[in-house]
Image (cartoon, rainbow, N blue to C red; front, side, top):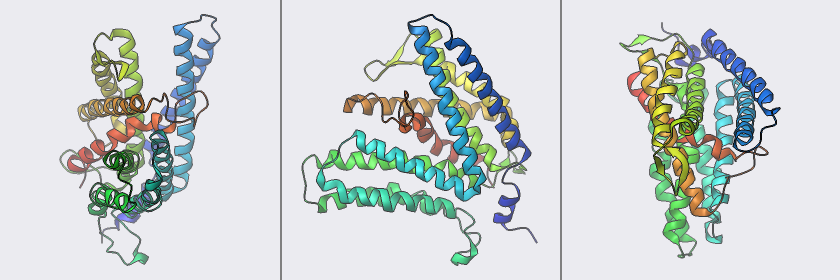
Length: 344
C-alpha cells in the first residue's frame, strides 16, 4: 500500500541535496562578505565606492533572507507558509502606503489584509494533502481554490465593497490600485511556498527523489541573481535602455546577458532540482525575463507616485517590496511551468 502524500513529504522535507545547496549559498555569501569588506577599505570615491556600498547592502539583505529562510525551514512546511504570509502582509502594507487611499477604502482594506491574505495562505497551507482531522479527502488538491480565489473572487469583491462606501472620487483608480497590490504582493508571491506541494518528477515521468525545499531555494536564488546579473551586464555592455523614463539603468543588453548568465548558474545547480541542465537553463532565462518585468513594473509605480523606495526594512537599502519584486513576478510562471511539465 503506497504511503500517503503527507508522509512522503515529511520524509523528504530536507534532503541531502537541500543541505548541500544551502551550504553552497552559505559559502558564497561568506566569500561575498569578505570581498565586499576588502573592497570597502579602498579609499577611491565616486561611482566605484557607491557600487561597492550597494553590493555590501545587497549581501546583508541576502544574509537576512537566508536566516529567515532557515528559521522557516526549522518550523517545517507550516513555518514556510506562515513566513511567506507575513512577507506578503508586509509587502502589501508597503504597496498601499506608497499609494495613499481615501477614507472610504478602509473597510475594503480590512478585508484585503485580514481576510483575503490569510485565506490565500491557508489554502496554500492545505495544499494537496490537508490534515485528516479537518474532514477533507486526503487526496484533495486545493490548487483549484487558491489559483482563482484572489483573481476571481477578490477582484469582484474589492470594487463592490468600495462602492458600498459611497465614495465615487477616483473610484476606478482606487479599486485598481488595491487589486494590483493584492495580486502582486499576495497572490503572485504565494506561488513560492506552493512549490512545496508539487509531486515532482523528471522528464519522462521518472520519480524525483529530492526535496521540494531545494526547488524553492533554487527558485528564490536564481530570481535574486537575475536582478544582480542584469545590473552587472547593464554596466558592462548596456547601450539600449528599455524605458529611460521608468528606469534608466535597465538595458536590453543587461536582460540578454542576465538570461545567459542566470541560465548557466541554474544549469550548474540543476542537481538540486528535477530539471536536466538544459531545462534548468531555460527556466533560468524565463525567470530572468519575469524578474525584469517585476523590476520595471515597480519602477513605473514608484515614478508615478513620486517615491524612491517602497520602505525602510533594511537601513540604507530599499524596502521589502523592492527586494522581492523579482520573486513576485516570476513565482506564478515558474510554478506553473514546473507543475505542467515536471509534476505527477
